[in-house]
Length: 318
Image (cartoon, rainbow, N blue to C red; front, side, top):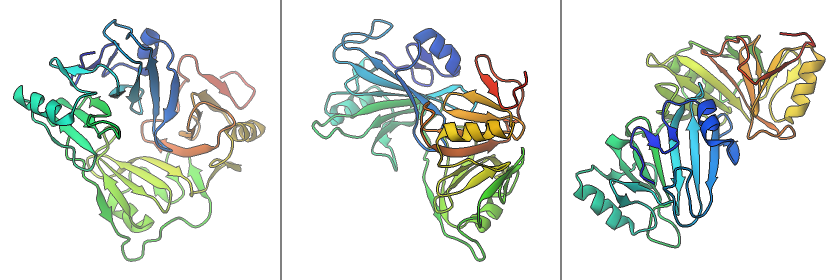
């Protein structure tokens, strides 16, 4: 299977929507979140001896398709023992020194992938994942639509007067924020308010991101360093209209929302509340799983449900 740097893999090209990829490839074998507030990753299992385009061979393997907040494909990871090639060079299942040398021999820039274990081809947006435990070979190939930058982490300490978390449960403020955090707030103000954490450059959805682990809050910023997306995760506590939203079975959150005649849209592993512009997430699409995050962003201000989505909450047609 020849990967297409900055384009994708056969059957899954960057820029395509989740719906269009699923229409072409069928439903994934599994869909899950890699972090509490992450978008869903679709996992496809390719059976031994083939790929849907006929290029696969040998043992079966896994492909992970990652989408951004708008449902557009932005990254793909293919795991060993997938028969992955780049310019005809087999990338997995061989000594990593040979792979790196052959890639460099073709003129590719290959360098250590910084904080991640493995090697990167920065201009091509490709990362060769860490070394397998039982062999001197790479475990995976990850490629994305953009070049691989030096996504270094920034550890920052609490500043004078900051507090690690808001006192008590945080309430959703419709289309504006959660608790003391507001869309449009300055990054410096949020760090003073919420304490220490880790800053990074996200692959999509913003120019910067801060993770306040102790508070359970993840904030995404635009190029002007103002908040465009906020996510509250455990140990934070979030409520809306008398409904406790975090750390409870999704079915219980749904039942409470129905009892209070709140409108919501049922999406895969998410309840979206259009009247307030926030979503409640679970790790995968199972109603008895506990909720993992409450997410509110500048780009999600309600509107009609997407095709195939089900609206509940008031008992009225919407």
